Length: 204
Length: 204
DNA sequence: CCGGCTATGTGAGTGCTTCTAACATATGTT
DNA sequence: AACATATGTTAGAAGCACTCACATAGCCGG
Image (cartoon, rainbow over all chains, first blue to last red; front, side, top):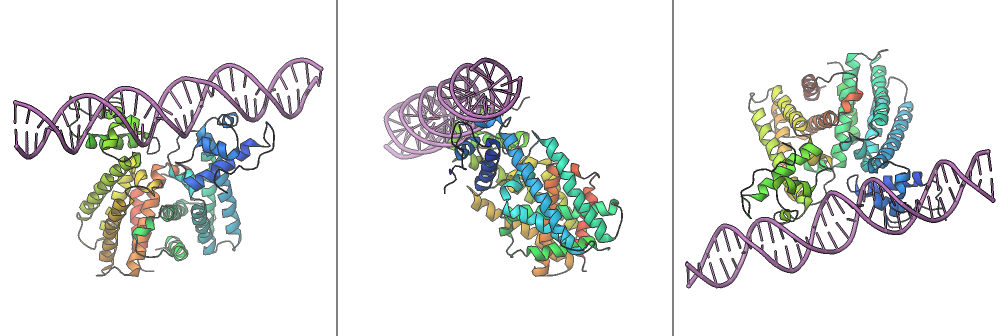
């Protein structure tokens, strides 16, 4: 099974659902080669169609990548909601859970993670993506408010939520970029998540 | 002055120092268009040479980018050393200063910053870069030890240094990727740096 | 001062890429 | 059955990284 393997194709001139197949091929290649190395031609080879075919379904290369980004964000969002629900409201571990999901997503799908957060994407689909992101972030803010026993998201809650986001975001990048090699210490991610959650949630 | 402007060229067949001129052209273009959009051909147009010329000085495109990365890291390192020296040893503001430099570098040179930390670069020049990075990080660890009044870099110091690095690293990316737009609050970077420095440096 | 060696430039060409245009075929609607 | 529309194809333009054969400039020993 090389990366050139076709992703099941209905025999004949037309495909079953080429759009979905191209999105899946794109996602796979972004993971395998990295977002910067992905090429439309290769996705076509994987899907078993000509290089002109994608342009019936996507405006350009960026729109293909944007589709993968959207799918990834939705995947991450539902994971976050599920993870939080495993513990009672207000418990600190709910916040740790959010961090766990963030880190797990980044490390299991580094290509898609980098696609979403890494590269500069001022271009297409920005609107869609910019509407999706605040929903994720509101989840974090709500959990912080719950953890502090507040019933509103005030300035203090917002600041703490932002600190937490910043931290797991940075940790994600350091982990997937293998920058942790410069630290001569094995990183205890689980311990760090608890440590940070505590330090951010306590009152000084 | 478009981006196609030539960067001063000594008349004649040979240049003064084409290598340096190409590195500068590369740096400029990486800032203007982003690391992913940079092309060797365009750098050649800027430097006013044929597209074959760079290959007398660099193995390939990645090696050109690596040269820009190295220069950027050295720039950042000397800024960090200078910033720390402005305050007495052991003072918390020395740590805040390290964060300030990190953030300032990321926001004033987002292209180079993303080049250094963002994209996956398993390829060329990794050795050079991997030797440089620990020197930067040691500076952070030493400051944390000083701030805690310790004379050695023990496990506790390492953990705190890593937390600080993680935080400013994440904040840098959120700022340059304009992801802070999803937060409906203006980000007080200066306040955040102090807040984090305190929360990480105190004993719970 | 000159012959040649090496460093550093050029022009032309290969094979890849993204994307477009004109054409072909399949699907569904009346 | 006939046509409109959706969705595929082939061919090709323009741009990319990179290579090779060739040209020229600077330098060094005689």
